[in-house]
Length: 156
Image 1: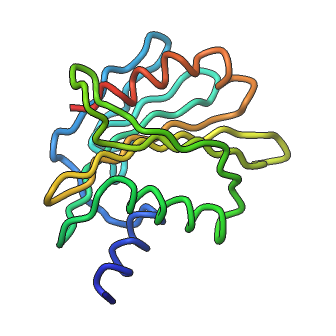
Image 2 (image 1 turned 60 degrees about the vertical axis):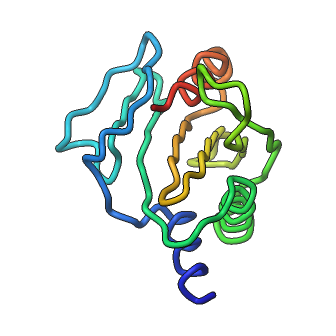
């Protein structure tokens, strides 16, 4: 139980420094991918000129938990400790797959005096969780949200 709580905390806080596993998404037009030196803990990271950021990474976990478990863990951490508001949580299927194996969470939060949007796509696998994220200022995010959602579904 302690090990699971620790893993949940690391996942929700984004502190697990894994990289280079090769998990990627299709980056929408208008984004530039960052090189390894600038993507930090992520396998892939891209930014738009308007400050919207996309990122994907794999987090190894011990034990098995489904996407609903991880979605609850992330939502609890972000809403209780980081000031985010959960706006929606929905089943999510990766591109080319029919059955939903993941969850898509949509959060909002004020950042630097302006409203921001944060999407988290979680795909639970037996030994790891694929985490795809997108966030940025609401005014920049809103017009491209459909393309961003497609990118989060494209994780492979």
